[in-house]
Image 1 (cartoon, rainbow, N blue to C red):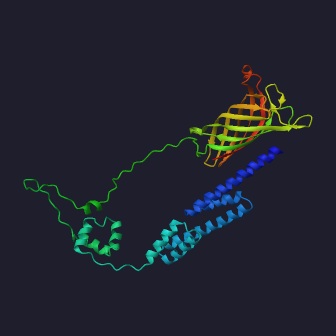
Image 2 (cartoon, rainbow, N blue to C red):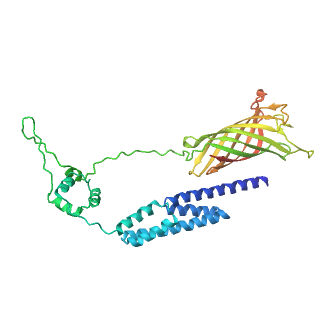
Image 3 (spheres, rainbow, N blue to C red):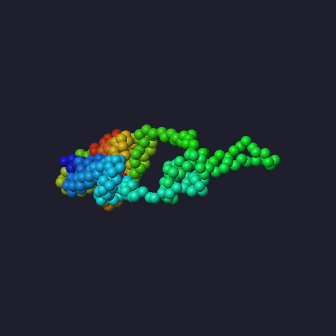
Length: 380
């Protein structure tokens, strides 16, 4: 029953964290104006959440749908050059989401479109020469720069097409005074000859097969273990620091430092702490340290979810409450689990290999050391 309660607690905690993660992703999408993404994440959070969190997810989902609907109406009106209607719709969106940079820029375009056109004048001959020499840039930037200068760009273009204001072509001469065949082309003809000869370097990126999609390698862990003893009412609890570097192709290491203690009832119904030694006797050894050194393989399905298997050695040190005796047992530990976001659930068991204090028995009479072990890790 305790195992079921612990597992249920772990699953509920994972779902709650998963829901919060969806809410955070939805908020980021909403702030950037990506309402389709916000709706998707808030909808997932609404499915997973409960109580107050569910109400919050519902409110955010409704707000994202409202903004998405009005941004569509605004874009349609803007495309149809109905700038007054579009302006009203963009303002409605900004009232719900002032961080929407797209709506802000579109609102500014609407305001500019609704302004009366400026009174433009004809360009002077000197200004036409400047246009030939690209002092106003090239189209389409040149057109706006001419308008900003109060010059009618359409009139200027017609006059340029007719050759008005064209600067004289200078023919270079050599030292002897003879005209060379090399002519100086105007900047205007060079810049207005549009070419698609620009080459873009394309960087070929190779996808790494089953590589980790998250970088959290540090964490804390809490474990419950069931010793293999004649008395099934004994229990062990561990807590400690976890280090889990991940490598390419799904491989990784699992190590850290765990501190634990054992407690339970023996046949005489008295309450005491015990530890299982290599002679299969329960002595008063109830404090211990465990250093795992495991090789693991992960199936990295996404940034938020993966499954894994592990196996390796466990180096232990055990002592009594009086610290009057100790042992250094070695175990072989194996198991598997899954990870959801920063939460990780592991289950497995371990085999007793021997004690460093009596190394001659190392590897003999391999028997179960822990029948069952379940751990909840939080990575950061």
